Length: 170
Image (cartoon, rainbow, N blue to C red; front, side, top):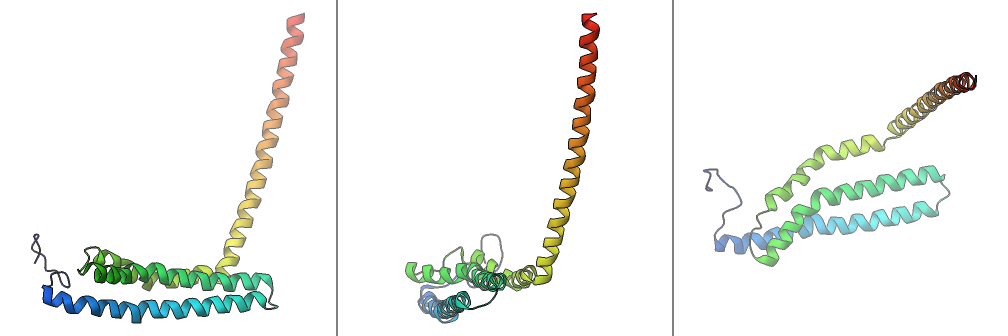
C-alpha cells in the first residue's frame, strides 16, 4: 500500500525481488520489443527499397510507403516508452517510477492501429479529396461574390464622391 492507501502491484519490491525482476524485464523487452523492432525495421526498409525500384505507379508507391512508415511509427510510439523503462530500470538497478505512465501508449495501441488504417484507406483518401475540392469550390464562389460586392460598393462610392465634387464646385 502507498501513502494514499491504494494497493500498488509491481511497484514495491524488496532488493531480492528486484535482483530477479529487473533482468527478467530487460530480457522480455529485448525478446518482445527490440528484436521484433529490428526485424520489422529491416523488412520494412527492404520492402520500401523494392517498391521504389518497381514499375508501380508513383501514387501507389507513395501510398504503400505511407502505410509502412505509419505502421512502423505507431509501433515505436506505442511500445518504445514501456520497453525503454525496462532498460533504464536495468541500468539504474531499480524499478523506475514512470514505468506505469509509459504503459499508457502501449494500451492505446489497441485503438490507434484501427484508426490509422481507417485514415490510410483509399475510401477515406477519396472522401478527403472530395471534401477538399468542395471547400475549394465554395471558397472560390464566396471570393467571387465578395469581390463583386466590394467592386460594386467602390463604384457606388466613386459616383457619390464625384457628385459631391461637382456640387462643391458649383
